[in-house]
Every structure is written in structure tokens, then in C-alpha cells.
Image 1 (cartoon, one colour):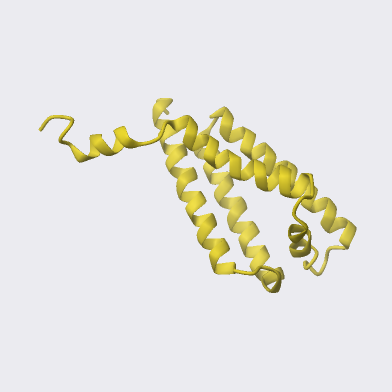
Image 2: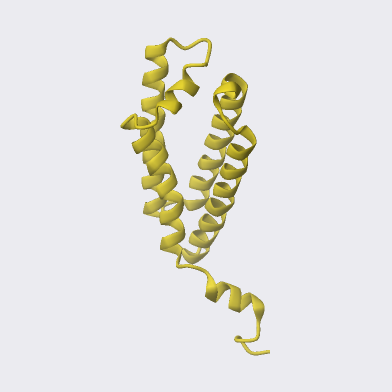
Length: 140
């Protein structure tokens, strides 16, 4: 069977370039971190965090900014291609933590919790595929 007839080879050939996959994942973190939290362009984010009962409003605001800086740094990390598997694991842990806390403390402020989890699951699938491809191309 030649390479043009092999469906696996055809599927790999049809993949977008690795840099585009990395940019797509990083863009989500940069948007969520920098735009929504650091620049405070999404008041809804603050409404969700202020529902945590043991956080004063000023603490919730500061926590959201720190989280935004961490998410922004995660987006930059993804673009550097350094330790892609570790980056995917960090993304996974962060999203599980954020989604769990959001549903536990602020379920009434999240319009569609199931949709949030579904979208974040799709992001993590893309993050892990991207990380696996990056690790494989680096010979790791």
C-alpha cells in the first residue's frame, strides 16, 4: 500500500501545522487570562469569583487578577513549546480546579455549566493532541 492510499498518512498530512494548533490553544489562555481577567473586560468573571463565601470582594478581585496573570503565562508557555506534556498537565489541573470551584461555589452565576465543561473538555483534547505532537516532533 503506498502512502497516498494509507488513511493514517492521509490524516496526518491533512493536519494543520503544529504552530497553528499551539497558537489556537494559547489564544484561549491569553484571551481568558489577559483580556478577561487582567484587563477586567469580563465582569461576569468577577461575579463568579465573588460567590466564593470566604473571599472578601477585594480579595476576590485580586485573586482574579493573579489567576489572569497565571493564565496569560500559561498561554505564553504553550507558545514557547517548552515541556509541552507538562504544560498540558498544568492546563488539565487548572481547568479541573476552576470548573469544579465554579460549579461548587457559583453554579447560579454560570449560565450553562454543562456547556462550560464540554467546551473546556474540547480545549483539553486539543491541548493534549498538540502537546503530544510537539513532544513527538522534539523527539521527547
